[in-house]
Image 1 (spheres, rainbow, N blue to C red):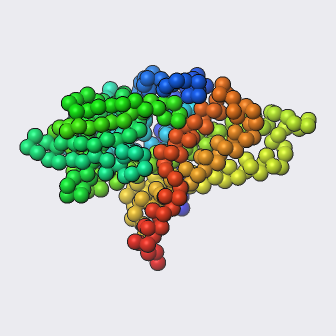
Image 2 (tube, rainbow, N blue to C red; image 1 turned 90 degrees about the vertical axis):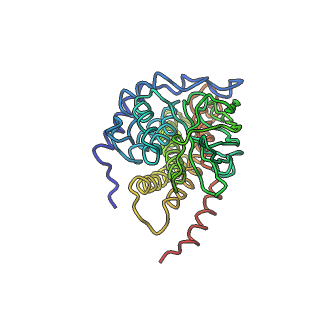
Image 3 (tube, rainbow, N blue to C red; image 1 turned 30 degrees about the vertical axis):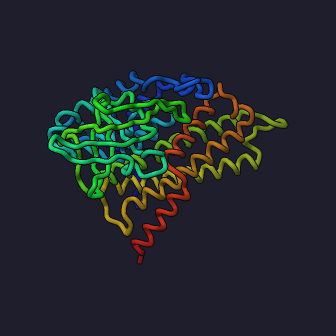
Length: 377
């Protein structure tokens, strides 16, 4: 199998490296030192630079000012963003815009997509359900009336909900199908309550109380939510990979300089073996990520649905990023526990990503159900 990235994909990654090179992760206060969120909103200056570099419109077609690239290109950029803990809704904005482009009405496409690609409109996605453990599509109900769709329910831990102009919300109908609604930031019946993630970022509980959404702002297409959900999960795996790679590099640099008994820590066999194990974790995370991103982007058929590849990537990402940061904390010794040292923020972000992905055991069970329903051979 050829894992070589295309020239366009590599160009996107190179542009991302150029933009993120100016971001300093240690410039943001540690969540352990804050009573609330580390900041009220996303990094707007960085958001503007991403827009100028055409990195907010990667998945959009040329008619909306985009590059027409795929999930692999987006994941390459997300991988670079998490190496510096970039505080921007890049994944959520890209996934919501791509969903509107693929499944939305022409009126909404014309009104939103070009502006979202230029960073003028910010989109996010509610993907964690009512509690963070139940399916997101079951947390909100949707019913049609003569004026449009009426939504009732609660979505928890919605990222960037205080910044976003629209939140893409999955909702369940009485006919047991899932629709996607673009819910505006302000409106009758739209209530938000602040939440703070383990990374110190500001999240929000989104409560919808008989919120009326126009027909044009609702996507009622079979499979639309599953596609968005898989893209969000795969993008989160890309964030976990980039973070893990940066943490392992930090660990290598530290153990190469820190001496014990007159020798660098990196020369001790026990240290080298632990670092090697984490390198293997990262390579497994990478291989499964690109497989999932390729399936989503290409729509290529397989023995299992694309959710099978996404599930495998989630298993490795959730387990792998946890092991990488735990080993890094261990090998850094006292520095690993110092909240003034950047590693602390990476650990907090890794825990947030792990919780967002969900437990590996649950994904293994779901993968087993897929295999039972789609026997191989």
